[in-house]
Length: 242
Image 1 (cartoon, rainbow, N blue to C red):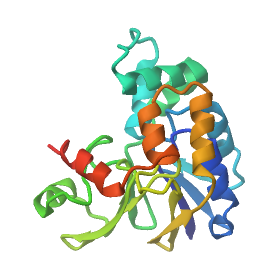
Image 2 (image 1 turned 180 degrees about the vertical axis):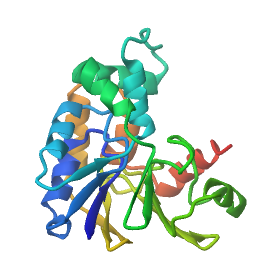
Image 3 (image 1 turned 120 degrees about the vertical axis):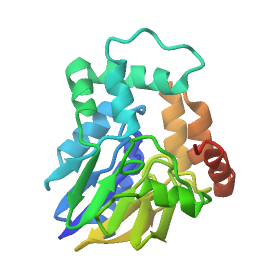
Image 4 (image 1 turned 90 degrees about the vertical axis):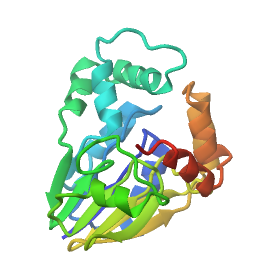
């Protein structure tokens, strides 16, 4: 079976369209949406596009989906809480029923012997980076029976062996922290993941996001408009590892 894994789209529908138009992503049997399809500036259009694909689509929950669901009926977020602000904007766009469904998506899903999760198999927001210690990686994957784990969350590709298991980070379709703005995704053929990069006009996509009034200018600029060096972001995330 050939599976297309799409992680961390963040409602950048231009990036999603670029990947779906990539001939290397064609003729797949199933699509796996690996969390954090939202929040983002074009959430409804992104979910509609994924839901309208002509192959089965499986979904797992990222922290983004959980936070959007939690924003329904919540008190107005503080101005300095960007995660809460963007979740609330997306919840308002999608409406209560559609937003709540996102929070009920599964944390993990196993297909063809590959375990898919958003961040780690035990949490949708746990950070493990290219710089994390072997001890941290071993703890993250403790008790996992699958030989291969695919995740995202850090918006940076990775591929490593940990205690006899292969861990592959798919990278981000819509907000990559790789220094170049290009969309990242995986093709998993009979349980074997291969990473791909799709070039498109990421700067224009980022400017369209900002022109639409999306408030997270820092993240959009750092990933798409004026991409910062990948190592700089890795070091920032690694400082958050606990």
